[in-house]
Length: 294
Image (cartoon, rainbow, N blue to C red):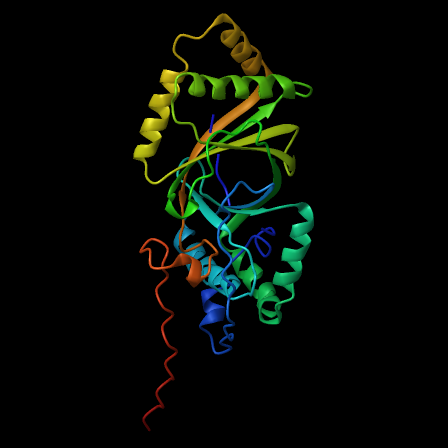
């Protein structure tokens, strides 16, 4: 199993163009609220993913780091963790959590109520189309009954394993039982277990589940896989039967590795603190153009 997370969907989960921020129409910066990353699993996870056109990653980053900076200036805007896919096609996903769907309405009012941001937004989206070939917007509900371990300190996590399971219609119970059996193996053998599970409720086909694990670095994946092997040694007949039914319920499984992008993540300076990984470089002061010499 693989889950961690910190919304709304990129303007609602999205970053402001560096070009806009540093242009002649320099947008005023407001005092940003100190909205921290969640300390427990959010009930609702919103995910907005952008597929990148080949060769556009540097330009995409330049544009969207500026977009993130602007979002960070909006008072009470929630944080968004940006994950860049390390395996498979080039893609960046923005994850943000909230306590309920109703909270999403509040977030939308906060972000879209910011006059400077809404003025800049059409230009930001227009420029972004040069780098993006497609988008996905999805919502998941937290499944604490399938998750394992304590919620991690996301400020210290740099790498994620994100597994997507798709289940045959009507086979959700088989998935749930298999997931609980897997978690019980770790408990029985006293192995560390830490993952978060979300069931997708909008934006995906059929019954889809996400499982996230996160680590301070890639070495955490080595240990996680080794522990997984130990957990599944010496299975009982009942456990083998549960996993057989679990596997028969699946129509699709994919695991990808993702790396946290501190530049694309939306998180104000007070929360970023002095950690070199998170701390943003100061914006260069605007230099007035020198008058031409006759």
